[in-house]
Image (cartoon, rainbow, N blue to C red; front, top):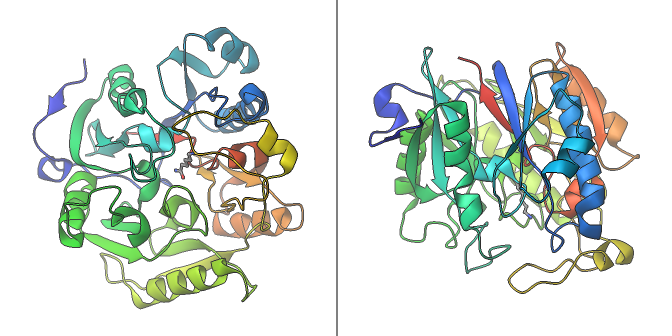
Length: 363
Ligand code: KQY
């Protein structure tokens, strides 16, 4: 069984590895709620299946699915993807799954508190109790012990370089709808203790109109220690331009745990992309769930990709920029194949490929 430990990863000599380090597999969770995914989630399920298949060529994939969707999910996924029944409220396992930590001999998981990206102050749906139990269930299946962290945090809110540096945003982690009773210093202390890290580099805001309150995984990520990929906008009239310039300035002024300056690699922004009337009409209205409206700008970003063992699986979002993004990713990851998957249906649900995946690091 998975035991719940009373210590912290740092105290026990565990650290969260960089996503670019070897994985033993990847978890996803199947979309089905019709008040977030249009047309009864059917188009989103096609997109998730394509992501699962693309990642499965690089490492084993497990899909968590409800009892109601088990047969449909099993039928839609290729046989190499393992399907297990796990109850969820939605399909964002980056945020609801465990953050794995390793010590060279073993693997454990951090189970953060989850409040659907803001609880009663801007959270995206209610209730979220099944999502809050996902990490414990994944750890049980993985046979990994669990740390129950004392703060609200989603996995998409942090990136690490595996050498002690954490990247995050003030917009999300200092948002009063997450841990209002904690100061910046107290949040930092918990991050370092639970990620086995030594230094936090704070960016300001996340991607414009990101409903997660600015998750870093939609804005920037480590390609390797010392190199950060950052979403950019070359339109000075676009609010994303100022956000990305601020992030770049902060990164260029910062150093990592080893005292290195960051090399910042810019990725273009898709769009701006907006929800069409037809897309908005396909989403069921439901009390407690944030509505989707025609014309709403979506937080589209090429940074939101999965960094697999032998593949980068990135979102195809805008034919005007998809190939340019792929070329930059190929240069950033010369040893990996870069594979694009149509991802607008995932974006319509409020996130992208990184948000719907959770890597299990190899030991
Ligand atoms: O950015 C992520 N890690 C998750 C996005 C969740 C959106 C919920 N609608």
